Amino acid sequence: MPDWRRLRRVSLLCCALLPGAAWACGDGVVFEDGNGDGIRQPRERGLPGVRVSNGREIVSTDAAGAWRGLPADADGVAFVIKPTGFAVASGDGGLPAFWRTADDGGCEFALQRRDEAADGLKVIVSSDPQTGTTEEVAHYARIVESALVPHRDATLGLTLGDIANDDLALYPDINRATASLGVPWLHVPGNHDLDMDARDDHGSLATYRRVFGPDTYAWEEAGAAFVMLDNVIAQPGGRPAYVGGLRGDQFDFLERYLAALDRDRLLVVAAHIPWFDTAAAGRAPTIRAEDRERLFALLQPFPKVLLLSGHRHTQRHYFHGADSGWRGDTPLQEYNVGAMSGAYWSGVDDAAGIPVSTMADGTPRGFATLLVARDGSHRLAWHPTSRPAGDPASTDAMALHAPRLLRQGAYPAWGAYANVFMGHDGTRVEYRIDGGDWKPMAKVLAPDPRLLLENARDDLADALRGLDRSPEAEPSTHLWRGALDTKLAAGLHDVEVRTFDAAGGEHRARIGYRLDEWRE
Image 1 (cartoon, rainbow, N blue to C red):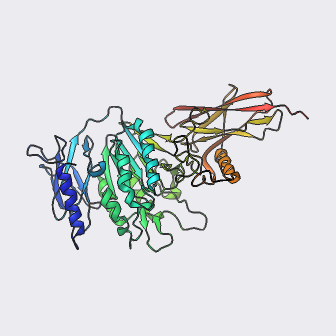
Image 2: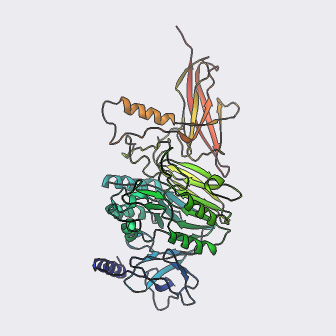
Image 3: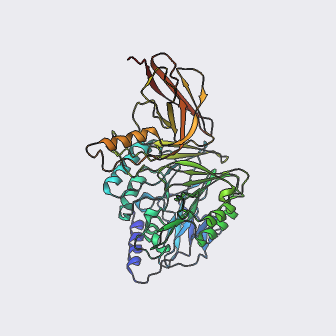
């Protein structure tokens, strides 16, 4: 560890231990870090026009790179809004050092010039690692090491909350695994990242802020601007204990930041709790409608907006319209991302010794990638981290199910199912049997038969098959069905399924079934 980092950490620790010590960061310098050591050298010039914020106010650096005027705050955090064309050096623990606290002193931010990728931006999007034990942290670390390494070319990584599962002492180990990729990584808090003994919403993120810095901030890359929002309003002692929404200071920040933002780029708004209501009938809403409408009003002038959320441990695309307060000309897309932990690290172990943890809608645990072109257009893809090797019925894009055996000539009441992990109402899914004509599959709201079978195996088992059994299958929002032809000749028959993503890319999988003659 360089001496300046050690001194800074000791200084902050000492300040934290002093009763009544005030942490404030009201002025400082943003400079071009030519040698990458994070320390300003005499010849390293300040950078003009870079914005710095405390999560409410925003100031810009002057011609010499100096900024001033952010109000002092007893536990305030100041951060640089990273501009396009620059990188932020890694700090303690390997995460980007884009934020500072200081004991009544100035704060310096080091930026390094970086060439932007000519072919656009790649972002790793993950949610809900939700590790609550050292064993689960080890599972997460092995997934990072094996499944995320091929994506080290990403410019940025995001985690959409529930980094831990209430045990916040695990943060250093979780961050060590994440930082091993060498990809700059941003976080927002989830409801399992709260201090359980907090007396109010502000105090609920004390530990989070000490480790990850601001809970509301912005970060800019070529083609895209990222707004990271804490949308978990803690209600200590209340029922429910939290609700989705935003604070007044967050709206202050959003109004100031968005007013000057280039509208040609993609605006990505990342948070933990979905902006669509997921409450069961008769229960309190999971998101404050008035906060959502106020946010949507701020987003409406932007032609390219993508909402990212987590929390649900299932996966779906939701398109907001007037019923949820969106007044834009086209629906507003929200991608509710599946969980890195899947169904909370449950189920039998896979070949790598990690719980298979298929989610309740049949989506395998995994992560997503977001590809953003220079014009702000984007593509999303899901990357399962647990699926059978060499099985043509289970691919990164979908998983198929069909009965193994049917009676030849039986009434065609049975079908093949395709769980298209990134599917939604507008997704085109087709199938054909034995190389015949392609036919559309019908979208159905039903449980994934593959998970129903796993539920049955758990029900019938004489001993525990894993630490926790798989979740009960629930209706999936991305399941399709095609009837199986029983009038074909006896024997094996091939079912091929194809689907097309939003960019026109084609994905295929296949499965078989057999027809037998009935003999009395």
